Image (cartoon, rainbow, N blue to C red; front, side):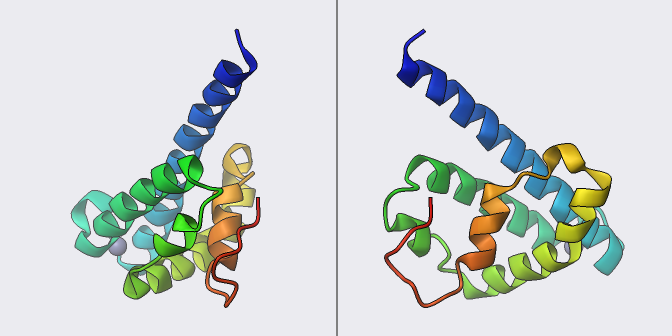
Length: 120
Ligand SMILES: [Zn+2]
């Protein structure tokens, strides 16, 4: 296997894990705050599909400024922050295997004024 193929494999695994993670986090938040399942909750369902799309974009184009641009929906960004605040600490307690989250990391820092810069 070439090094490139190997890193692509790792990348796609990471994407899967991050999608799973964000799904769990949104589900926890929704169950607590809305008393629903994500499938039954319009706003959380929308947030989940948006987040998963964002993961695809961000991971593949992570070195480009597009990473900032994909947080264009302010309303969803606030929602996502609320999810992170609520579910973030709980993830490390209940789902430690899913806990190593560069995606969550990035979200936590994406609201700053450092447009155009990107932390690897
Ligand atoms: Zn909900």
